[in-house]
Image 1 (cartoon, rainbow, N blue to C red):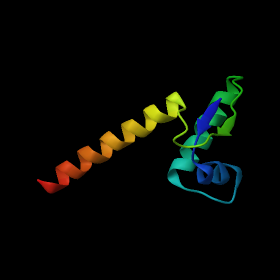
Image 2: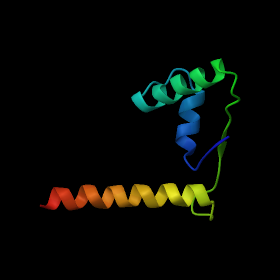
Image 3: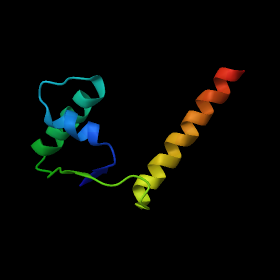
Image 4: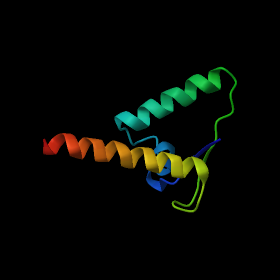
Length: 74
């Protein structure tokens, strides 16, 4: 089960006409997992609602952004 707070990502994954590098990478990985008989499901969760994994991901992205910004200033 893959939880995401990104509705746009879920919409892009469902729309076979849409192709971006990241969406294609996700689709490829899902196909590989399904060939190994994994069951893969995506579910939307509300952002900033205390979901542990989601909060961890948000904190990681925030730290990465801060690192990028500090590098561009110097």
